[in-house]
Length: 452
Image (cartoon, rainbow, N blue to C red; front, side, top):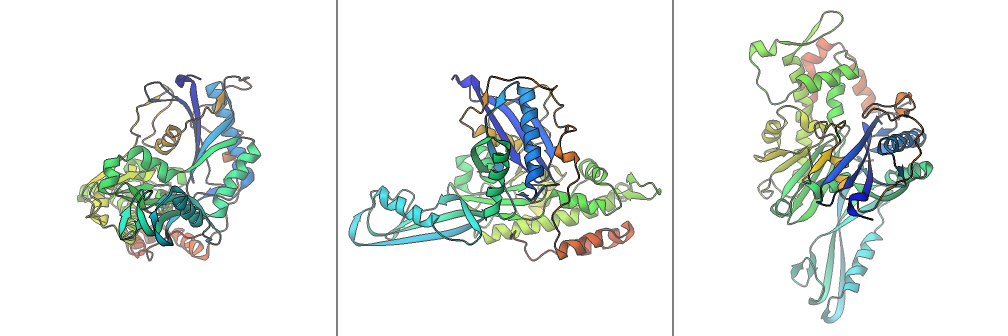
């Protein structure tokens, strides 16, 4: 089939939204996005993990149906992107010795990889393997095939996650009856599409500020060297603002409209009213900034710690830091990143390198579509059939239908004792929070590392 008919469907399973896009690759290599659907997912996905298979299945069915209505095509298979708080990297090495010096063969290298994949890690699965340099004798080689040696050490970076992370995704799409062409890790997909070989070679850190999690990926010498997920995200900022007795929608709007970090306010600016409550009490610019600043600093301190844990200091990551995700839209986030983490070169990325054409009724949404467009860009197989029988009128983009499971109330998973205590604290009157916000939140968690 001609290149212009290469229709691809990509679905990203996010903690705040499930996003589906449909588009095609054009002969010039650019991407034409023709359909976008988003539905809330916080009722059944938490920190990247599916907790309610039934609601997830219903939501995916709804997204598939709405994409088909917009595209006027039947969807036969999809590409799926995901992440999660249990996602992390682990180093592993396999050593083989030989009786005599001999040329390293491809079979030997393949055997090392198989042995690495057989490594047992309890309830965790190896989702991706990034081969590092091979130790051949006293040398390091990217490609050891043909090198004479009496020993070889295979060094690998294994990307791990809890076994249920992928199995739950497979179960949902099996229930829907849609084939998954490939499931891909969103942090790796984004890096492949926005980072150049030069930047990966010089060394850089990619930080994806998601709703429930923040993912840190470190690249050096063209290879991924470290990946970790912090179980804090931009939704935590919204919850902090909600403790001022605001509804979630109002708190989110306040964050996006007036929220900023790393800002010195004059008395006049600080006393400016940004929100008025029904009882006529007000929230000032200074109070809002104080709340946001405290939580952002906590997240950035954890980002700093993860970079230090990677053993690659900022002086060796010469290409600097790249920020993505909805949390990267906060005003002055670059300045705050420089002050807390220590990188002078900080870039915020909202679109992939490929030229992307959007249909007239689709908005870029300030980088919200970055990860799912990057996922679509990796697609190589046709995902639709030209045959389609229209059943209902197309729904508006970004607006859940009445059938959407997002409109149904589903109990969230049980919270931990620590989270429960935090929830109680957040329900205190706003005056108490304003007085103690910085002191409470600046007692940073001891370098949070997401564990299942």
